[in-house]
Image 1 (cartoon, rainbow, N blue to C red):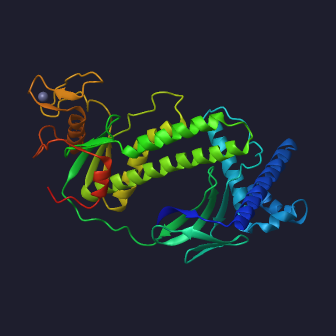
Image 2: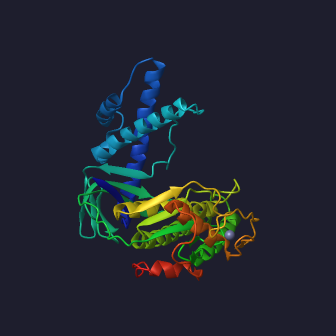
Image 3: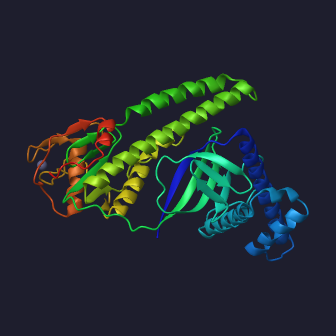
Length: 392
Ligand SMILES: [Zn+2]
């Protein structure tokens, strides 16, 4: 069975928002109460299990915190589950020799999700109906294929609401017909990527526009007085701009990876060698730095469900070696053209690299049937050409 998750925007009314926020607050209180119980047990040298804290929830409803009854019981169970997952993660880190602290109590506003697992939710038309919450308009911008097994309600920093649907696909994946083609992809900084069929995809233009907007909003935010209402407004605007950057990036990467998954049987890529250069990069830059990893993640997922393959090769030699004669031609970082003194060939540096990635993937050195002239393509164009290219 394959799993898939969908994220959809929610449009809760003011009343429902208030309810959701109150329930998140109750979840936070519960988390802290259960954690306190764990600490107490530890102090007293008493063994305590996930089942014990589970049973404690019913107890708390009757005694200390009757308001917990306002929250769907499975959602409360998931708080307990979350707590124990955190404990397991922490002890895993400890086992791996990492220095760890203890679980901390969570402050106000920390809890930003409600986790409906298995039950307590239903979608009817354009509404998501949640137990003990009510109806929330939902925008399902793509069809949901399969059975919904869980819904996580999320409040973003910008104040927007989302539902994350965990869906079990009951259908076998639809394999695409073979295209009889393989491609090598080189990712770069100057261009988003270059492939061995001669496409050079530029970094999308919206990056610059959105980054500029973020810079402006950051400046505005820094001028607002701490604690003022205007500062809060500016903070929300900035959070919205970050969200927009993430959405634009993911949309672009989905379409670009779709293009390669549709058009090639095998895609060869080099294991990531691009890492964040500076440590103190800002959030916007971090979002863009994550693009390569995301691209390969989307590509692998799409290729797999189409019955295709993404093969990674170890980095090394791709830039320096000549894709025509195989000899080593050292070049500086800023040299954009590969000029081979042995065989005389001249190629774009990244195109040369993508050919090397293809050949080493195919396990044969040397010339393929055809070397195509390099075409510089704006990101938007390749993305619009998402349909298969005619067999070459
Ligand atoms: Zn050569």
